[in-house]
Length: 114
Length: 116
Image (cartoon, rainbow over all chains, first blue to last red; front, side, top):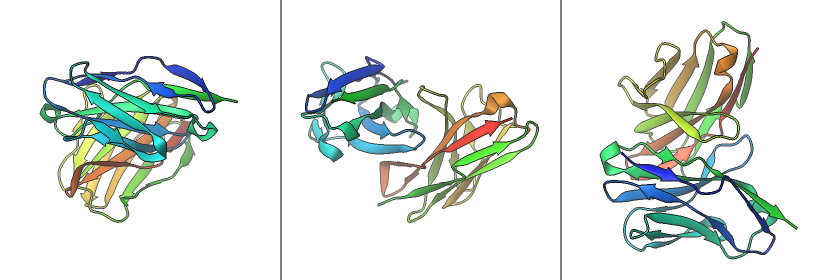
C-alpha cells in the first residue's frame, strides 16, 4: 500500500518569499507522485507530476518539486509567493501495486500575506 | 486539454430524497472514473472506482446501496445519493483518466450537497 504525509496543515508566507510545502511518501514500489491545488469550492488542478525520468519536475505557475528517493520526499517549492497562490495543496501518490487509484495527503493550506 | 464537467455545482435536497450528480468527460473518453468525498478542511476520500460498462468498485466502508454509481458510457458517470440524510452533506468530486495518459487525472469542479 502507498501513502503520503504532508507536514504542516497550515503554512504562511509573505508575498515574494519562498514557498516550501512538504510531502513524504511511503510506497513499496516506485511511486508516481502528484501535486494538486484546490481553490475554495472547486475541484483539483494538477500542478505537476513525477512518473519517471528527471527527478526535478517543473509545473505550472512557477511551482516545481524534486523527487528524492533516498528521503522518500517530493516537496513542492516556488521561489516567490504571490497572493494568488493562497489555496489548499494536496500531494498524492499512485502506486503500481494499488491499481490506478490516487491516495491523497491531508492537505496544506497556504496563506500568503502582504 | 482534458476537461471534466460536473453538475450540479450545488444542490440542496430534503432528507429522504435522492440526488444525482453527473460527471462528463467533454473531449476524451474516460476509461476510469473516480468519485471522492471531501469533508470541510479535510482531504479527499475515495469512494469508488468505475470502469465503463462494469460495476463500480467501492472502497471499504462505503455503502454501495446508498451511493449508486453508474458508468454507462465512456463520457458519463453518475453518482446517486439515495435516501439522503444530513450526514451525507459533503463536497463530492469526480475524476477521470484516459488511455492515452494513464497518469492524467482530471477533476471535476465538485458538487456541494446539502441535505436539510
